[in-house]
Image (cartoon, rainbow, N blue to C red; front, side):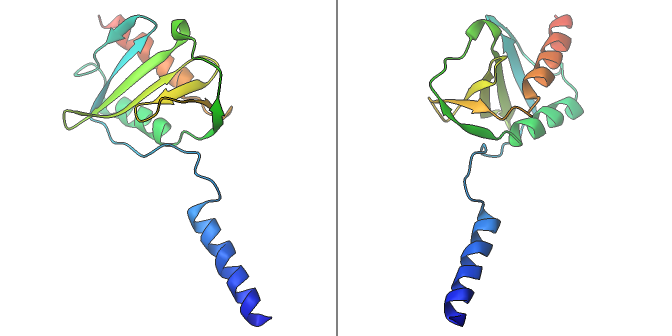
Length: 133
């Protein structure tokens, strides 16, 4: 009985450490990013301060999603963010106003958790960058 209880405790501890399901994105780094809305695209290099870049990287790295969805991204309201680190693409996020998104390393669409505000944050940044052009 003690052996079974011990094995059960080990199993629970390992699940707590590793997580029960992994509905989060792979972590990225970025020096800058390019950002677009609909058909427009603006280069962020030398246009976006480091704090803003790191803030959006942090928001990206905290993305959790409830799972795959068959819903299509509304491209007219989609923001596309291409994160660049050491002159290479480290991540791509395409997300619409309903929270439907896909990533660079996936062709499937996901539904973002409703408490995530990356779309709103990205829209503010997009508007700031657009004013600089």
